[in-house]
Image (cartoon, rainbow, N blue to C red):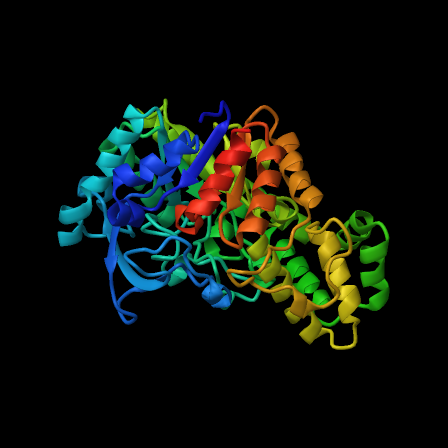
Length: 470
């Protein structure tokens, strides 16, 4: 079976190690997959004290999540990783961040990445790497992180608690210089790659407090460079934060839930010029980050490699700083996440914080207002915060079919001619997965990336093949 659109699956190296490269490629080629994403690391078992949980727990909310495909016989386990290659230390001389040290695991298992690239290409399947945009060392999500002085900060100078994305400030020169060195290293070590996908090249808004960064010293310097009044941004953002934490009313929530939500929000933000300027600054920082990544790839002889950043969908992208038009100037494709399990987790987190700070408001109106602002349901959605939570493996995900498709069309309109791919998630029960994959496949004329192989049982793989090749 074949498709002329992109049909891609993220296959983390541990499954190449566990199931073998041939077995994975056989399964994926059978259903028409023409692109694969992996990452430059290898993995082995560890204990709870020395390893991280697989699958990730997403700051605790995702601890219910289990793998569909057993990994070394387990649906959850603790693991440790090592780079799949020997970094060229000369590229990192004098930098604040250094690459992970290769070790015996690297020597023993690292060649599995070379084997994947070679064998996939013989089958006509493209291979991409996915790396983190602002989390050193950057080989894998949820491993590593920035130094304290490189973290993004809120107006009061604190770092948000219980962060899902341990991103650095996008303005940190320490992190940017390291990422450029890492890109050169990967492009030189793996010149046969078809592209690199950068995850979280933005300020991921998983929590309400995440929306109110970046007031780090790095961002202050960037604001000065862009002639943005940083102190006005800090003052107005702090005032807006305080208004949300004690100033919400049922009248205002009703205007959002049952009136012209966009106009109400626009009129409200007009009183906080510095908030709008802060959004501009974050947009500039994200755009500069991606421009630098593309230029680095070009400068080290990788002009033919595609650059495909991942992004939150609208409206989250407006707060995260990801501008589809700016990103399109440097990218050969943009993948937009339709992750319903995260949408539920995020709405619940926002709502609980706001309700605690505004105990006299109606929970129903708050939930209705959040559903409307986030645009995640085709109707009113559920009436209570408790109805929105990180779903268990057998629970369907929120997200109306039209609401999901609309987010892809909005992103594509903003990106112009740059292809926007749907980034769908394999987690969840089969029937709901089929619904969400059908929406994802129909939403983008360019194709779909599926995250990730570990959540794609054989039954789900058959669903993918049936939908994509009908």
